[in-house]
Every structure is written in C-alpha cells, then in structure tokens.
Length: 98
Image (tube, helix red, strand yellow):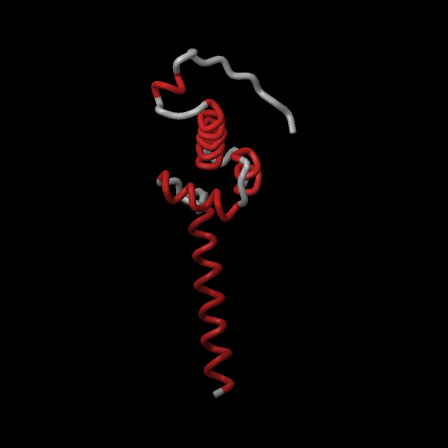
C-alpha cells in the first residue's frame, strides 16, 4: 500500500483527546468516508483505506450519517424501475403457479 505524509500541529492529539495512533486511524476513516460519499471510492476501496472490513465501514457510515447508497437521481430512478419490474414479474409468475 502507498503512503501519504500529512503535517499537522504538534498538539493536535491533545486537542482532539486521542492518541497519535487513534488520530491516524480517524484521519484515514474521515478521508475514506468523504471520498465514498462523493462517489470517488467504492465501498471496498474506502474500507481498505480506512483499514477495516466493508461491514465495519458500513457501520461507520451509519455512525457518521453517510449513506451507503451512492446513486445519482437518474441511477436511483433506473434501479427503482428495474426493481419494480422484477417485483411485478415475480408476482405474475407466482400467481400463475397457484
């Protein structure tokens, strides 16, 4: 994995009441959450950046109010249309077998 160096004030850990290791993890998580929210990273890549599993990353999304459904309005409309059509097809096929 590649590495980025970030300069920050000496007393930042004290200001946010955390250790250096916890601060590093928080910065990685915040970057991952924001890049995922903006659609720059997939959930898998964001989880890897944050150093956790996708399930754990999704839990963090919930804690920080980041939607795990990153669809544009057009994509969302298309997904809903496909789902509604699949539900109709299933309902018709199910009714025909009974």
